[in-house]
Structures are given as structure tokens and as C-alpha cells.
Image 1 (cartoon, rainbow, N blue to C red):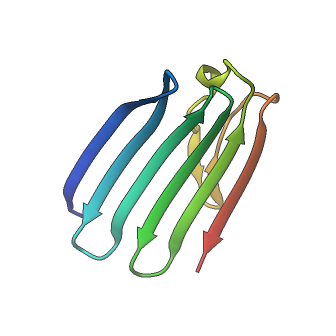
Image 2: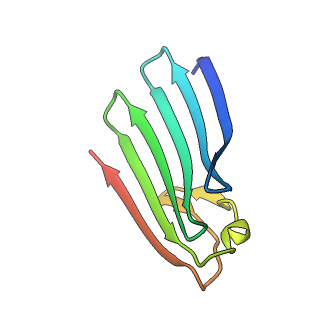
Amino acid sequence: MRVVSQGLINNAIRNNSIVSQNYRIVSRNNRIVGQNNRIVSRNNGTVSQNYRIVSRNNRIVTNKISITVPKACIASIREPLHNTTNGTSYHFDNRYKISKRVFYV
């Protein structure tokens, strides 16, 4: 896979909090054509993470994770631990409400 474009937009601010991180990877070999990671914070209360992987061979289309956390706990969210064959393993505090949806076509 050859990466032909990679960009990073970071530190967008809404209501005095970090709102958005966007990563885009484009490949010309029709495997991975786009990847978007976004972290949204509203009023320091709700955080949603959307991971989108678009593939022209119609395998993995969308991996969406929604996380609701209390105020002032956004910094406690940890990064994913590792990838597994059945999905992605994530490690969070038990106080957080976590919902995970993975779609395949």
C-alpha cells in the first residue's frame, strides 16, 4: 500500500475544549482509500469517537465507538490497546458508558 496523502488537523477549539482531530490517509491501490478519526467534546460532558475506514473491496466499512463521560474526565480516556482479529480492544475506566458498533458488508 502506498500512501499518497496524509494530513493532520488538530486542536480545534469549541467552548474552551479540544474538539476535533482529523486524520486522512489516501491510497491509490484501491485498498484503503480514506481514514477519519474524530474526537468531539461538547461542554466538557460528551465525547464521541468515530473511526471510519473506507475500503473499495467492501470489507471493513465503518468502526464506530461512542463514549459518554462525566465532566472534567475527558483527559482520563486512554488510547486503544491493540488490534485483534475480531475487532479492536479498548481500555477505559469502568465509570464510562461505552457502546461499540462494528459494521461489515
